[in-house]
Length: 168
Image (tube, rainbow, N blue to C red; front, side):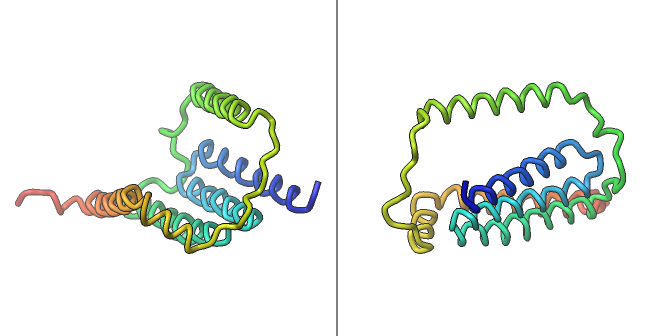
């Protein structure tokens, strides 16, 4: 086991643990901060896998923008900052669905790879190849995501200002 393997396992454990804390905490702001830790660990995983561009995009877009948008939405909508009693729901349906999804993914991976060794690519990718792929084949989902984030921002502003939609 190499140092990269140990680092991958450690960062994976941090990401899974922080992800579990995101969905189990009763504090909305803490859930957002745990999400920062989870997404930061994912960026670290990308760095270990030598995908530097993807790692920095992860940090800039997800950690830097999406989580800040989430925290601004919490502040603008005047959501409760402390523990919320309405977030206290039974955990067994979520555990059942999460376990089923995890089992389904495990079966899918075992069936897809059949325990074979995955060979590394013959030549490493580059930022130019990634950009060409994103802005040629994936341009529509990229633009749909930007419109979705804009709609979320406008929705947060409208919810925070109740006098906007009110008739005189």
